[in-house]
Length: 364
Length: 82
Image (tube, rainbow over all chains, first blue to last red):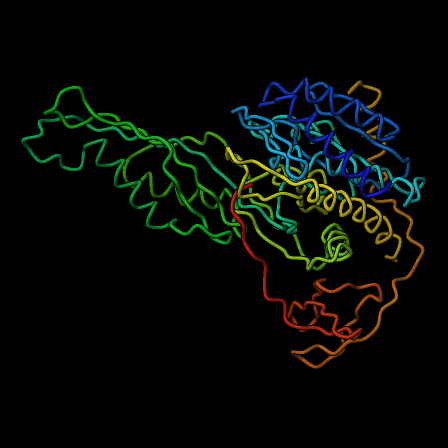
């Protein structure tokens, strides 16, 4: 396929996906659009599973490689604008641009691999911006692969780790009392503030290799202005270092909260993921594919989370995230991606599949 | 996904560990800039690839004037967001 027709195909593809606005839990229309493109791109099989994931595949070999991206977006529809160079709209960057790019890129690799050795999957999952019901269903249904690329905008960097996340609610109680007298440390608000300040002093570095805590909700107080508060609660979003695990953080939290005679509940959690740069064939194949496009491969850890946290290690331990698009535009009202970025991304995904398939043949 | 396809997924996943590999990787030797020992480097390596050496150092492949060199890997960067 020539560069011009590839440009046109990707422009049409991403614009059509953007027109099918698809916030989490409303992905159906976008999945239908994707399905028609997947069929026309030549995938042998195109299925939609019971939660709405679209699974396209070709080849029939025992070696399985999967590209997985999400088709849902955060809520907040934006005008769709295509000026011939850039495409704007909700999800252009996160992550319909990367999604269109890898569906095309993987289809272009069809004639470059031995399809008796390899099966290639292009999968659009639902719910990534919510409770990740799409990737969780793949895990639950036993989908496994020898290599997985999670398609998220990464500025062409190869993402080799994401921090984990644990969201907790802390509840403190007090015994009341008149505020003209000392509280004797029995004010729910005072306890809550003490716990929060202590946690903020321990987890105060926003780095991939550190754990950080952010306050997302807080409530405490009494109707009466002269009574020490009896009840207070706060919600925290704790992001867990790539070098740690959620259980360690929860043990530390438990010790601290217990000191102040407060309680806590885990609302949700996901462990961090960190993969080897040197011994991971997905990373190696991506490195070679990026290099082939004239770029210097760079490796990064991300401070947030993605479906890679859930894909590893169950679906595969050979996993990395990669995608065209400026990740700093994700979730903003300025989501924009250029067709050139999508074309380069498609060529890198194509190269990745070709190189990953060959790498495994070279291992004794 | 229908039950038949679900079964296909599970059935095919059992092949994961039965991959047949028949070719031997070709390597050449490049000196480690830290310990001076030779490092096995795959002959299809590209600039930017990262290799771990038995001396404990992580090395980055650099191509200069057609020559393959190794330098200590400067580490993984960071990015915000998802």
